[in-house]
Length: 338
Image 1 (cartoon, rainbow, N blue to C red):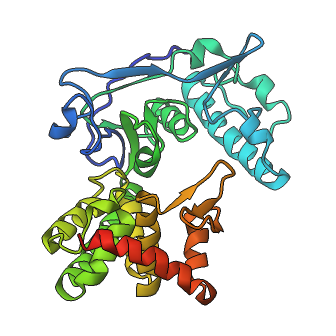
Image 2 (cartoon, rainbow, N blue to C red):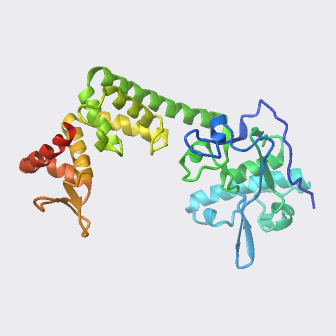
Image 3 (tube, one colour):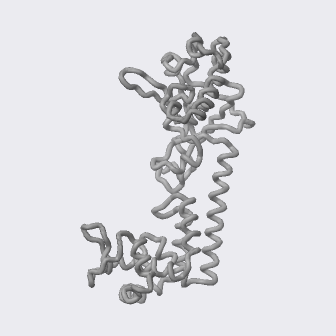
């Protein structure tokens, strides 16, 4: 049986467009390392074995090369057949390179003839590991069969410390230490976020220059602490706080989401925007409030307004409920004018 190098040091080939890179978010605390663009302390690395699930004493490695895995079995017939064919072609290639064992992917006895890459070969899969540091780990799957194995494993969730992509790393509730960087995909994701952020900042500048009244309502709607804003609040403060919001420097740190939300909010008509601000502050000041039944009521009159703030918004936009809108608006605007 061919031996497996447990931890391999790959040449830092700058021509490779695939690598494992450290992931960090400047706005997320990581023992202070985020200030320096680091994921780990210098001269340290994280090493992880290929993920393995054990059920009833049977081990199943997360390789992406097991046609008997649940994620393959759950595909519809056409997708499953295509996936199995893809797996067998790759396994056949790897088996030839690593074990000098030539097996036709179409052979009816395919898995019976595989020697090294059988799904249950613990001696092989149990030794597949990655070791990552602050320096990019370049993968060359076209040249190195072990790089190909690791690449496929990462793409199928085989290593918990490495996200499948930069975008997935950003979406995880608990950020991973590393991500798989396919240059084209990562650049595309980062460019998309930059474009959204730049558009949002451009909209912010327009409001600051030409429509500070709307900027006030936008800040009310987007800032969790909306009650802090009064009509007397300097426009520079509104601008600065919305700039921080767009750049993911507040409670919401996902820059794509914040930019999108800002753009969506700015696009609202003034009536909707103002009533949303009124509803939000009416809730903050307890002019409207929920009860144990899960509905929101006007506190003074006991009038049922809806189940969610969106329901309340629609209720108050209805011309038939103009008097209730006027009553709530009057109270809220008194807090704005203090």
